[in-house]
Picture 1: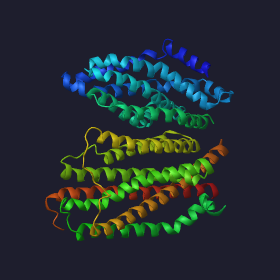
Picture 2: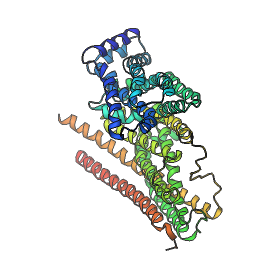
Picture 3: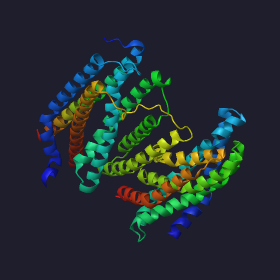
Picture 4: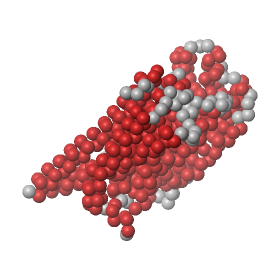
Length: 218
Length: 244
Length: 49
């Protein structure tokens, strides 16, 4: 498992691996918003939690089609399927690699972007915490979506259509946690829900991912 | 073997052929009776005026939107476990009908909302949940269309239906939390649990029956079409092979 | 036509939209069925005839 993760990490970081792309996209989207909405501080500050979460979601989506596609095309996936490593473990490894190269960097960079959107000072810790607990779910769900569409040539857009609705619960609770934090209210419930969703996804989705990989490899 | 033998495609075509006209007929009768009854022969609601008549379309379609997805879920499970092609094709056949039901529920909800809430769209938890369900339906149909091999398509869409069902339930809870959130007491709800007076209740029941019968008729009809399409595909492939 | 009062437009619009959609899906399903049936019978005739 570690070998799979290490290999994916190396591939992502190498030139053309798309490591920086997700972060750049995150930055660009966040910068775009004031141009669309106006520079008024009060407004930006109110919508900042939602914008940051949605932008993080979209940025996570970007690197998902690399998760299985490259291995599928050169036959490596078929080989991995016959190896002693169970496909479920492969699914988790791929998700983990995706999180380390995309979700985690997004989480770290988000507070910096929060400054651009005048995010309330009290909200920063909830933004970071929420993303930290929530982005693993995005990776696991995204890996499932990537597995579903791995055989398709132009599967990226379809995968987004399938994956984005699945992101809605995490988004709702994650953004709500930041909003409550900004107002000084207790944000424990939404944060706990984000954690619960992540835990549930990590526990159960790899089985679904393995199943669809098997179906696509037949 | 019991009832599973009816899942055999040829037998399926056999037993559905004679009952289909009766299903359509019964659906038509129920719909006409309930809608005429509700439209012409029920009073206005003291609060909602004549818009209460929209209930005979909004409630049955919303119920069917959910039930259609549930039927697809069961059919998907049957396909994955017992590999009955009729089951997979029935799920595929039901999806467009489910989409239409969801659309009717959303549109009638919005039209009803305008005079009641002053806006065509409100992010009311119920309407929002139906919007999310609509997105799941779209994804399901898109996946069927994207995969070439029919059996692989059936497999993948079945798993999507199952995973989607879990997330749909989760979203329902999340959306309730999201709209209630800091704004307690948003009492804008086309609440079905409100005691609906008898005078509205009876035509509503008949309308629901009509929608259920129409759904069944359409799904059986469309499944027959899918079965024929599958047989046609098989024949053309065989012909292609023998000519090659 | 019953007196729909000030909500006449809304009620009629709701009924119009719903009935149109129901008719549309029904007609499309029937047409599609007939088309498949014809195509299948033609191919079967060609292969067996």
